[in-house]
Image (cartoon, rainbow, N blue to C red; front, top):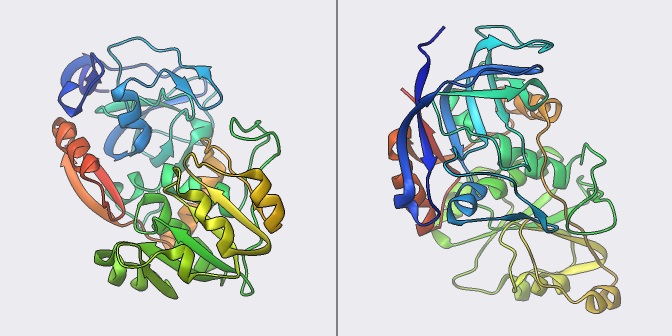
Length: 336
């Protein structure tokens, strides 16, 4: 077993990347149903900087209960160090990866050790290193739950109706907006796995990357408006969202579906007039789904692209990189 302290990145006050501090703290003890993971790599995700900036409520206005200082982070890959009571399915020495306790924002992954519910973990694919595995959980599960299988019955904070993934097959034409980012580049690959035709939207610097991943068509949004070029689509996955998301409604054919990953601004009457559906959800931790995705990662059917890596002690630099945008794949923290 390790000594009783570890290094971790903590938020002591809300603000910019400079508030991330590299502290010495006690190693947590696994509770029933949990294991202790010695962390090798951590994936950096938008909820990390939302929390750093002072997020106080989850979507749906549910208040977040946390006290400062706190350890951010949800995506982890590492090795099981200890097993708590009633924690079945994993043993000391197992290599694992997971999205921890989401959407509670209580993952505590920016650390040398983290406790993890076994239900949130899967065995790390043998052919994938820890850095690439750490980039998969949140982005991969978001793409999976939007496109392949929701996998849970929890009510959505965004809509009354349960999200139902649209069919993906050789007869499907799908557009991915923000295709070079974490969710987008995995979503593109999952759609190609299902034989769909995929139009990727990103800035021109990402064209070669996205065509290598299988994009059938590429639109550089800095040169052309995708809503003016794309028509008759079955599905749009918009990983960007915001007030411009509604422009994709008119790219869909009747019966088509628009899935905004981030908050969008829509006219329900326009959607009804066009005969299209707007459907969204919120990603949740799911070890069983992650195991399915892991098999695709191990086979090379899906791969995680790494934009950049930083040491855990340099988490501030990772957040500064994220703030500059135009990310290709995932930002990763590595733990010595």
